[in-house]
Length: 453
Image (tube, rainbow, N blue to C red):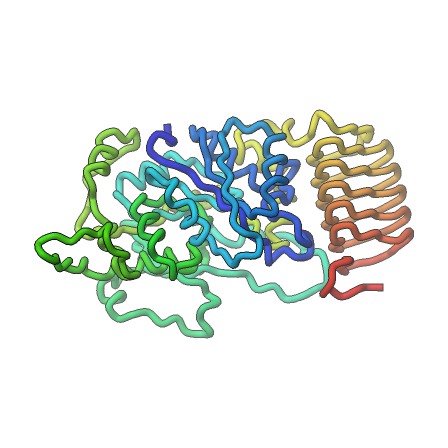
């Protein structure tokens, strides 16, 4: 099984800076996708592929709440929680550095916001076959563009990755964010001369699913200048593929690397093929072909099927899109039945519910009409209410004679009777007054946001 030669880390310490309207200080990884918190999906993916232990990196202030929520879901995983200071500026690479001494084998790294339909076994097999240093999973981008965004109308500019790769070998040759460039993308002459057939795409999405050799983590542990995995570590290692491995000058006939702290560019000291690597290759259950080991650093991409679902839920648009599709994609995404989308602890008296997910301890009264909705835990929906294409987070109260259409309602918000809301964002704990009629607005108690009368 996969866990015998790979460890797994789920990064769940993100602060959700692109989700302020619906988070307002809450743990990003606990945002609901259907009736389950977001972080459940990468954990469940690992469980289905034979992993029994996962390192979960969280913020210190959120650790207890996250642990309690996941304990209730009864995953068959041993979760080892490691926390980072809540007030620290800690990137994803910084977080991995903190647990580097716990890494004893090659590593599978997933972000808590990666909701992806993928079979990990071919991905791991290709990693072994290529003898890759890093392998990243790439998705077809733009799968969250089919929703009408609630809230004030504004121009939306999708974030795009620029990824250069060799179509024949799937070797990754260049990686950057499109926002790093104003109009023109400048590439080195050496890169273009060495790779004249390189393809550069802006339509692929980095899924934040990485298979990483143990030596990369060892290198990261002593390289404090690299803070983010995607923005810094990956481009840094990818560029090193273009360099010739330097000749190490020995001192007195012997250089003891463990006795000194390597410089940032001394990555080649770590990119070596060890006796342990030989043993792993011989024992690996994954398919292997003859390896091309002409260069010690090799970065590859694995492309998902274009029809497979995959999103990074890191903004309001992708959050809404993922939730509105969850009823349709849940069986192929998780291997579970659609029945798992409606909690057995909920109380549903309505007979007019179509393609909805319902969380624990939620009450839905009679004479209500719900269509394509996500109703999270502990919500109450009173009679004579119509809700369509909307997401209600934990603890929402909807009184009688309310109409919600394409709305996101933050946790513990209250929608008073007679209200009609279309394309609206309602922040956590906000109370919408009785008989409110609003369209395309954001209603919130949060400081720094505009109050709408």
